[in-house]
Length: 93
Image (cartoon, rainbow, N blue to C red):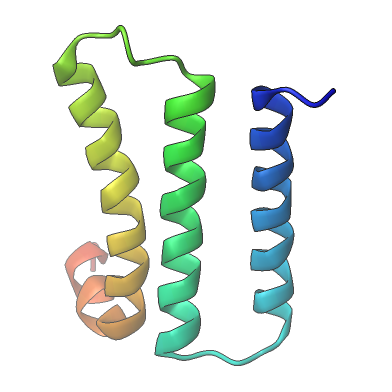
């Protein structure tokens, strides 16, 4: 019988394969960026909630981790739409 951890792992594998397949289609654009950002958010939340066992942790730690898993997909979207601005902000020269 498949348990909760195994179902979560299989879901993560399926989402990873879906992301890899989407990347290979070569259809860059806003729809793909939004889907990839969504996959990142879902996968991050699954890992945090199911594998890191932070439910009993201090609420501040949970908020920081959930904030991080929200920030990363937002940065993917930001880098797609405003890559030139991001490059200027992060270039040393």
